[in-house]
Image 1: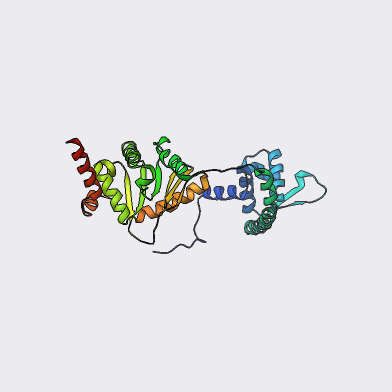
Image 2: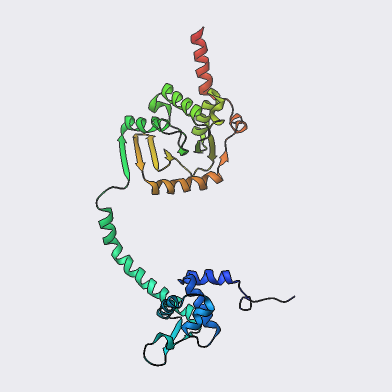
Length: 304
């Protein structure tokens, strides 16, 4: 068994045509060029006869190949087309031409980079191509947070979830919103949560209220104190909704920015691949939620 090197390998004609076409030659130019490589000297008449291309067309093709630096045209006297002889240059010229083009393109790229700021300034003008809406205070945070599920729920939501405390919007409103999300999500919401005491408290409470809390949502956790989320950051299509309600800082922000949405979504997906899916067994291992037990006990007392 013998090994065939690349230099010894015979490539099919269709591959040769494809390569030369990529170089910038037309189908008829390739036909004529390949024919000129086979003989030392040819006339337009003989090329026409061999390639079956009309002689008038052959003249134009030869001029194009000459301008492209692949062949040499020689005339015995005067400029009579019939006296023209054609000789192909060494095929290595193909690579020489590419190197020259590459250098020219590199230099052109440098010049383009220099003028782009001015061109882009005229193109973009002073118009905003992204939208930022800031909402201050608890009312602002509430508007952004509670308005999330009023959007198109069929569009997937990726959320860095900080599990908003009930004392911001009230227990009734928060439970109503969580129930709405549990009912509507249909696996279209993916949430990443930092696993800490607060997260275990909120999750076990909501799961105790409604076991569907983890059936219709996709929730994963990251158990690492370095990973800290202080806002709910929800990415939906090209829009980001950020809600903050921590200590004395409360606000909401809605950003419409395709590039920022893609950046945050890529970070989300990387973390999602490393996070641990939340299951019933994991929640059960945390023990009963005392807040939920107190709530149930209080309702039972009132009903008596």
